[in-house]
Length: 221
Image (cartoon, rainbow, N blue to C red; front, side):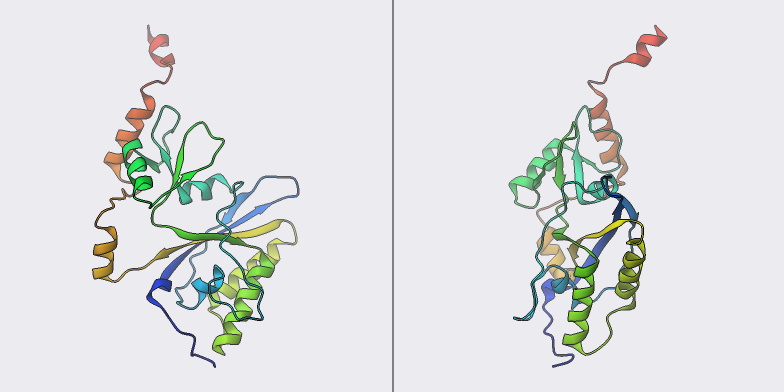
């Protein structure tokens, strides 16, 4: 029945979405990071957790291994080390190990010369093509008996337009929004530095520079 889709607190989420494009045979690059409106009905549909029996279920596919660097840096933290670089998303080795030990984060497989771990705040990552997103919007409108939020319809129109020149996909993940009491309990044992937190960044940079070649010093001598 319209407007009778049950809502559970677990689906009070922010959807972090990223539109990527590539040409045939090329690498993915970030086209847009749309700010999607909050809607408690859409997150379970996007990750395939709420479908009718006669629907083909989507599933949480994870973030693709060939994701663009910009999206990779949003989904993961670089672990401080000699080749971690000066990116604003560097976490210390001790913190990364603690997140993994607590089951809040996982090592991210990468061919880069440094380690990465997933951000503990993100969950149920997946990706969709244009047909998948259209199916989610249709499913939403059929079940609720009303139009999908304009932001999602605009996103679908943009992806369809981009398909004239590119291969297009939508990479997304969820960030659960807790009530104050829930948030205090959920995050009490986990400290996550902001990605622009100055002290953490400077400490990580100091660690990463320890074993760098001292070319500048040699030139000065």
